[in-house]
Image (tube, rainbow, N blue to C red; front, side, top):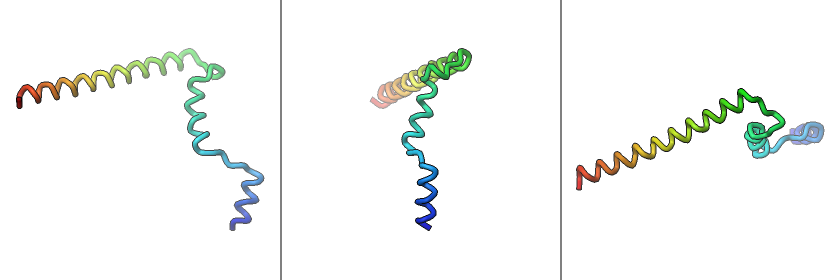
Length: 72
């Protein structure tokens, strides 16, 4: 079985999984694949995500502060 696997891999080199995953994120940043509408949508979603994360942190801090005031 290993002989078949080795023969297959000689003819069809296998891609490194780590390299494959990192290249998929690079394509979003690569100017060669730029599409105006898609780039605008991606940037908008990034801003929405950042805003959501900030709001979540603020809510958590407010809840902790309220909890301390009620128990302290």
